[in-house]
Image 1 (cartoon, one colour):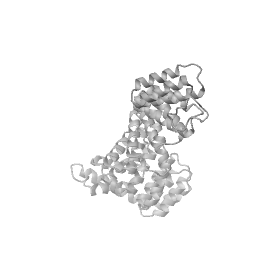
Image 2 (cartoon, one colour):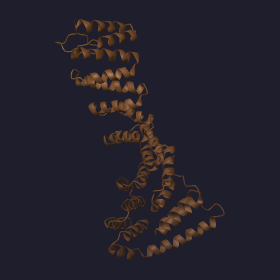
Image 3 (cartoon, rainbow, N blue to C red):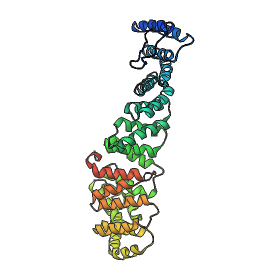
Image 4 (cartoon, rainbow, N blue to C red):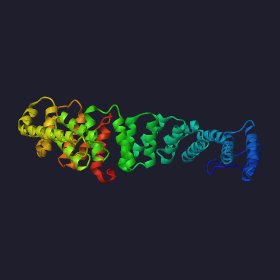
Length: 398
């Protein structure tokens, strides 16, 4: 009896089917060709029921069962048959990978997501990264409401693409943000929107970013001024009281000239000086101008004291005041000394240094500094937003 090989190239030349097994399999082939799937599967079962089969006969029956099940849409039977074929030494490695992919795809299409996940994972382990199969894995987790694993799988794919200098698709990033929203993880959701704004800068993404950062309870109080500045720069700071708050925070951090600059921005934007609060706004501005003059007059003494101080704060603050008063390079040098004194909150200090570089007109240097910032409480995301604003000002201002 000649051998039957529904999957070409797999059977060995020395292998043969007995008449008992070969006859029903020949009938199954004919029924399959006629799309009589019930008859074909019955013939396969008849062949399988014969006792004393050789390993080759068992293997050939599994081949035929897989072919009939796949064409008839019997996913469960096809998956089991492919398991036999994949586990056999008779199947070449390349064919095994094709079967793994077919098995995983069938499980997904049948909405059997619990079976699809291990099938996809097995394929990826054997064949390596495959964008189509990785997407099916993410979606299989998501459809089971396993948002944690869906986010992890999607994040892994995105990270690998970025590392390879490829741009993740917009759908991937949107899906990642959705997963983190379902997990009620605002920090990682914000980071997903940072990537969306970076690669697909749209007004909705910037609005979501700023909203999420403002709502993040873990965002350090020391960065609230920076967040207000971000809103002012992107045109989302509309309330006069917010500009007043921003200027007052600058004064509290002992950089009154920055407060003056921010109030001037409010006047230029037409937010300040228009209503009943105008006198109070003018009074605050006059007070800050006076304080800024006092700070400027004492910069030389403050710089000398800051250089000798054991802690980082004086050097960071005085250096920033020097930058704001036109002494850009000496001020940044003093701030670098402060960074070398191990500030209590190094990420916040690095952001402050980047802001000083930006305010001093050294935007390229500021971009590099912001890119260095780490932290999971909003520091990294806030720094990346400033980096984006410096590299894509037109997109951010939409």
